[in-house]
Length: 394
Image (cartoon, rainbow, N blue to C red):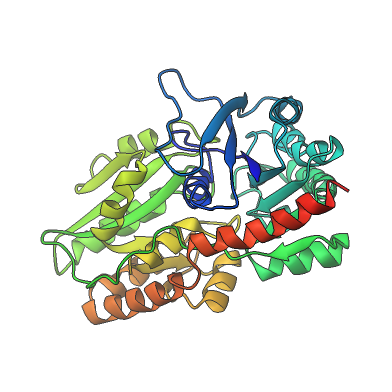
């Protein structure tokens, strides 16, 4: 198979780039694949895409830009140029832009590809029905939020005309089947990025690190976490450090710098900036606990799967998709109420003040994360790709 993949990808900092990195890494080891064609977005000046040697070669086509209104047409032209056997889209609803118009129009790429005669398979990491749009930064007033819901419904119907839609949460399957009558929706395993050896659950010497990882500024915000950290330091039984690993969300440029300035008086807070893939294991291994300071959720969390694969205890908001993920996949965590600093502070303290509880949660999460490695997830997709190729883009 010659497989084209539409996605963000490192060193690009767009959402889902880590998922694409690991998916492609395993895809390039498969005997069924003869070539991978990466249909990726434009990078900032000075950056370039690089791929290590592997049995399957990679061809790179930079063919879309975050926020552009013609991304769907540009992607279709790239597909027509390379003529792959199938195109795989690694998407969330804001992949192609921060504005509702750019984001929605970009989603037309998958149905346009199918109409051009090439099978289109989509991994959809979130759906608008389960997203708190105001918290996620896409609906700052009720009228705008209502319009985005309407746009979301319309463009979801367009997206569902692709050959295959895969989602990673059972609730999403139920919604897409019941609301839209979609016959081509499948529940796909998220997969574990790294098959790590079982950790010893001991922490490195020095301050206990409270770590958060992601792209911040919309529904992922660190102000409440810093406030909780301030309170934890006042009554800590050991030295503590807060590690904020990651970058601004594309929709919140300058957010982390504003937090750095606003909370300059709080000591022992470290901002790592963008974390390269090679540094991810160190960031997780050094952490005592991984905190998810979210006011909303937009799908299954790759960061939670990563935390589990490194045997880390987690602190999660008691909302939405996280609750489904924890219940159905076996993850365990301390929960806090969104927007409640005292609740967050208490949840973190329960873990860092009790090493046995921290190890217990870490062991449970490691067991949950070991469920389905990414190499097996790729095999699942290849079976579906083979069927679609045989059927054509009907």
